[in-house]
Image 1 (cartoon, rainbow, N blue to C red):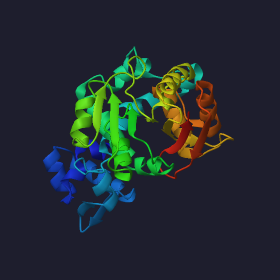
Image 2: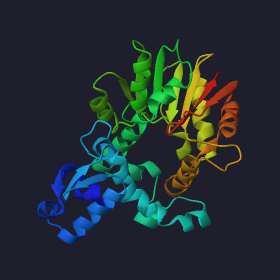
Image 3: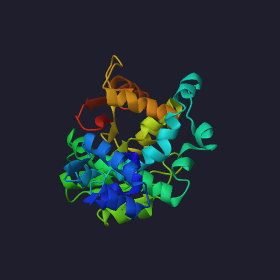
Length: 307
């Protein structure tokens, strides 16, 4: 799949192996082997030597599809695959593999955003992933009565858009790094307000509901305590915090996707996936009086903390 994406197979269909090989300057025999493998994986169809996209590939692997996951897949190919190659050392040392795989030092997000192209690939990839889960995460809890929803580190705004779709006429803001904000505006088309800043170091915009979606799993517990304490202090009494992450079951035996993502966090960040009880403990340590966890069935689950 990674190779077919990189070569542009899903944009070239319908095509024969010979025609695509000529177009791509590739070996005809090798192209046929690749395309036949994609047929076996359910990514392409084949009839009379002509290859076409399956419904799933047309929707999720074509780069110009509104639901594309191509950016996430390409980031997985170009970055995560190489970090995972060093998983044994990550387990031995308990730390991410950026220096080992790429010779990079410094804060983890300096690697994700090392160039504008890398940033766009990473964030548009997460946008496609978020489109699969944000509506379910917003629907998991009753957020009626919220006057201002602020998504901290909200990237392309998929969660804020899902909030506005469910609660029209309410304010929603994405708070993210200055280099991210132009992409947020581009993708949301002005439906979402934006504010540039670093949620660790800058004042947070006023809100009665903050969200952190696929944020806490990036960080160590000391940094999470810092961020949750800051959010708690900024909220009014009765204010809410929506945490969108994959939840690990209490026995830490599943689900598989959450445990594999936890290893992914080990190789590329300071964090991991956690249980509902662990998020409850983190929130209560910050001062929140209660949490409610919902397993959504989508790629992320939803924990609501109340001040």
